[in-house]
Amino acid sequence: MVWINTILLFLLLYSSSSFPIELNQEEEIYFNFVDLNNDGVISYEEIKQSLNLLFQIIDLNQDNKISKNEIYELKSIVESLR
Image 1 (tube, one colour):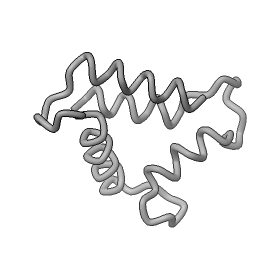
Image 2: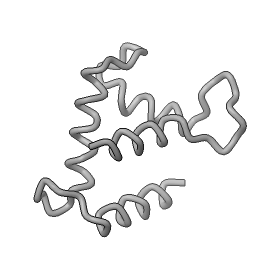
Image 3: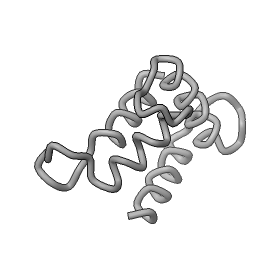
């Protein structure tokens, strides 16, 4: 589960620019993905729910395990969105 936290933080914080004060469009998308109730803040419960959702999305065969192939698929999806 630690790597999912890392992926989520990476997606939320990664930016091609050098850390501007405002979020860029991509970062806004990730923030809004985690801010499930759209109140402008992210609670711990929203992070847990988002991680659960992310895990379900990545676990393509629904075996409650994530394989390297499923990670490769995730990387492919993320790259195609750029």
